[in-house]
Length: 71
Image (cartoon, rainbow, N blue to C red):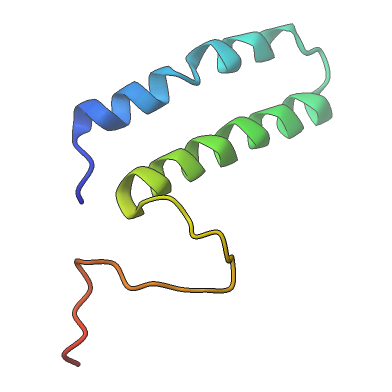
């Protein structure tokens, strides 16, 4: 499955308010910690949209449909 630009923008827009709330933080350390949390969450959402939800068993790997297994 390939994510469209609109799908990506929708996911990114869902994090906009959280990013704006960072302006209230007055020290760089706390700002950086919260910024990192937001972007890790955004990255997870993008990965899940592109690759699907992770399996219940975190150790089990599955091949994506777009990968070439003929090598």
